[in-house]
Length: 202
Image 1 (tube, rainbow, N blue to C red):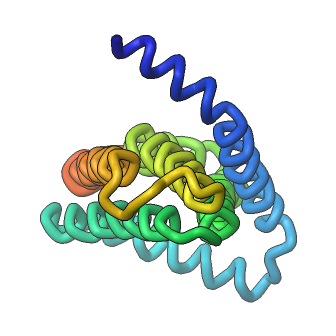
Image 2 (image 1 turned 180 degrees about the vertical axis):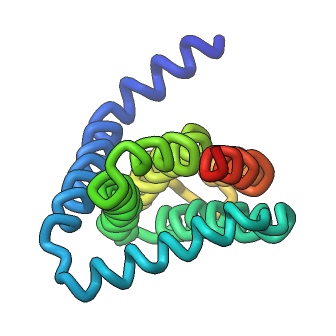
């Protein structure tokens, strides 16, 4: 039953997967390329900011609850924006822009760390960026697909009323993805700071 539903979902939304995936990929590549054209002033400021942040983590751990709140709220807000865009007939292009932006930030952050910190930057990316994004990135990706799909359904007139089964399914699915990004906040708040502190003090 579940397999049939998944196969049906993939068949009906294969184009959405390609479209959202391309938006994420192009955003990531563009973000990585943007590091190469940073002005010297901006680069110096960013390096100083990163070094200051790493020094703070190395000397004292941030409050986990505060990090959890910030990370979870950021993820929930991101999924929430995608959910609201999906409820509008013209939301699909803005969803793709949001996914592109997410890819841009990810690509820029990883490329900047690697360029400025070399091997240490790779380790920083693996320790601080990879773990939460194992949950958050798929959640945002799926939220983008669901949002574009529902928005296009509205545009095509496939949903007949505001309390239709499609709307309920869409809302529950996005709520589930909201839970997933909250879990990524747990990883970011409680797992990453001690890992970073250990790595920076080795």
